Image 1 (cartoon, helix red, strand yellow):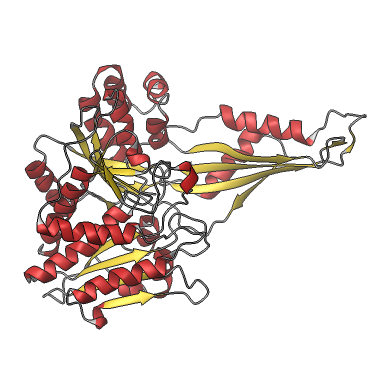
Image 2 (image 1 turned 120 degrees about the vertical axis):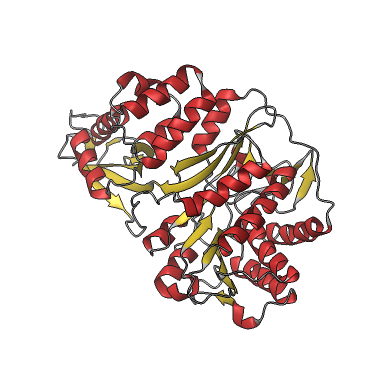
Length: 474
């Protein structure tokens, strides 16, 4: 998911009323016209898990880069034989200093499913209307993927000679629907292709208020771990005309009620402390005061209670677990023999799956309810990635130049991105985009996904300049 800035969105909602359209569409510069054609081609190539083809999209982007002068040796289409439509692209723009580690620009090119009958417009046709681009993937995350390809093409056209090598990895499988994940595959099978000092990815971005005013520019430097658990209870059952107290459904309902009523303790790290401290000044009022109080004392129950009312703030303060699926019984005239539920947890960095499972067992407090993890293949969250001056300095410099007065805010991401796979492989990954969104976050994963035209073109210019600054760093 461009799983973008749920916490910044919360701040936007606190300041927002009815969202208005952004400034009028632009895009008349020749380089913007060329970018739009590339963006359109990528967006209109269906890459859903059901009927899409990421390999085709990767091949189209490689063809554009080859036409711009990239040699075949710098372009690698990678495909796992058992998943022929889930391929991706790694492209290399060589630097002049062989001792300087590369920069990696990561983007997933698969998108969430979209049904034409549900959308106002064809989800796989890029449409510009009312100051927005509409399409599935217009934001999440073919906007940034197209920007990465376009940026390297622009560098080659102008003869830019960076100190550091710049790499692009366009991958498939981030949105789910397939057991294949391109980022994980590269880490496990072709690590040398993507080796880098650090990577830039989705997960960060800017927040707008109701009038289109920029509130803050977020930089993601950590993610929670998504981990689901199965809760299961069994029973001999029997005829429904002879009910007994030990009913599997009642047992499960009681267990889930205990999960519902439990709140994990507040955990703060450098990223969330920085977020709360900076956003308290922007939000102000009772909420801002509560943010300041919680930074001073994470055990402040009053501040916790006030902030936790907003799910977009609550989810960065602690581990969260919630029931998402339930199945029970086998016949309407029989006592249930089995009841199962799925509980999805978003685990705060530093905690482990084992610790959360142990907490769930303690919460449920019923040895008749078995708690089992589902799919532990994905990496667990690690400590927040350091927001060093080498990383933050260029972001702060460009943000001040392009959007004076807009603060750069560190963020912990409650949803998940492919950055976790890279971080587990030893490549620190930061979420930054220069793309600004209203509180609806561009309707990503929902109907009529969109991105502001001005936001897209400004984000493109921001990332073009940012990568140049990183590429020439000593």
